[in-house]
Length: 305
Length: 142
Ligand SMILES: Nc1ncnc2c1ncn2[C@@H]1O[C@H](COP(=O)(O)OP(=O)(O)OP(=O)(O)O)[C@@H](O)[C@H]1O
Ligand SMILES: [Mg+2]
Image (cartoon, rainbow over all chains, first blue to last red; front, side):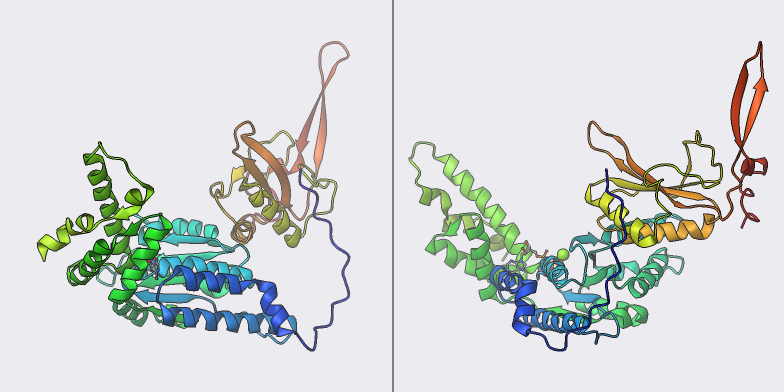
């Protein structure tokens, strides 16, 4: 059974320190490890990484200000992540939650990831409980709203999305210490969304833009993903994949790193087929790990081009 | 007469800070927290009204404390309790329950004696509050 929460004896309010060892503070929160992991696991995204470092520094200083009793208000931590599909927004949101948690700006550090359907109901009276339910789940952590602009449908003035927006705005203001909201979506549509919902823009402390990846970065991402799964390109496959990237980028529905992940999944499938087609051979670990040029070149991407 | 039941009944009423700590304890154990209210204080009245749905899958007490504040705003003149439900196999029951709100005045209970066959007596307790209709039992029904 739970022990009763007895009241601790009220201590003399400790005097705020007058000086602080910055390095000690920095090391105490252990964010360097998170930032290093971010650097390592995410290829490219230099502007994003720079912004995150800036935010982390700002929050570290804010934390020290709190300790020195110099902080006057709780900082606005709500963010907006804009960028094309598959540019790493969700991945970075997860890391962000970790950083905020380490620095003590969210109590638990989990991420609840939602879209319009999770927040907005189907009939009158359905939306408020739904939105509140999600907000309760996100308390102490980060609420990540993907494609946030779908909440707002100006063409239908009775749309229930508006109700959800109002609840969100209120909580973003009044419970800033309880949760951080991150809105994500394509840059142009987010811009329009903010224009019609200035309340959101004014509550957001940090805008981060996620650039598209260059061909070279996409190749590096592919190799990183393969390495994580104990696969690799043969030299021929690597050359073919470089080609694949150039062509795939120009085709519709390209979604950066996600397209790469999907392409690799299909190539692993073709590799397995190829291996199983010839049962009478002895395989080495190298055979099983290697994707060959033929596994890449069989892709429909090449036939469409 | 101060009605007591559940955990901590031997303690003074919990402060909000203490309630938050208990709620967080429940969440950390993976229990679903419920808010219930009633204006019928009889000890055998086990089925109180629920405020909203049981709250599953929460990580932090803040959302629940917000619900409690809402519930107090509407039913602040009644008894409100919180319970933690453990859905784990083998338990599947309430593990903790405690009062978090009570009416300003609690008029207490009357003991009724009914003389029956021979020299026997049957006892029953009736709370003075239930003499009035539901919803108007404490204060001016506000
Ligand atoms: N810079 C990167 N380095 C390595 N892997 C990456 C990188 N960016 C994204 N990925 C991988 O690509 C996939 C898609 O990334 P993520 O889901 O974060 O994109 P997103 O921007 O949220 O996309 P969407 O807008 O479609 O939701 C994930 O599997 C992620 O691990
Ligand atoms: Mg995403």
